[in-house]
Image 1 (cartoon, rainbow, N blue to C red):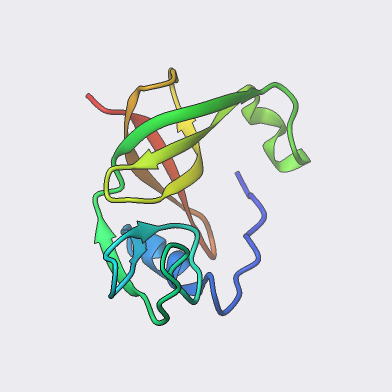
Image 2: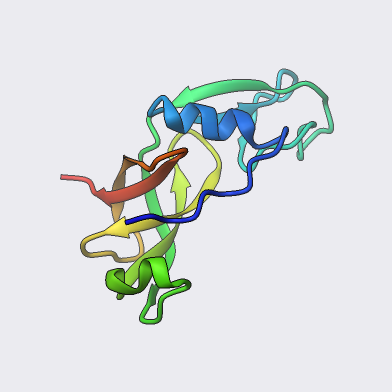
Length: 128
């Protein structure tokens, strides 16, 4: 599989670097201590600047999901159908990621890291 690499910019680079190291990193406010994703330069809750990065397990719960029956690109044509879920992370924040295997709302999931040529993809699988 040769999936197209995501557009990585200055703001998202720390996220992609962490995934490359097989870590899930969220931001944490140094003032109110709340955590979130996606990355922002200031806390979305209290406005404090310069948030800290925190490594979390990446485990979470499926909030919602969709099953794709048409490929988004030719590179993914042999992978349909596949599931994309909104995952509420135990350590704070929410991500959209592919889920391997069965998927249901409220299901506990565990992260998996899929290394591509120039980037690493975060995926999930049911927690066993």
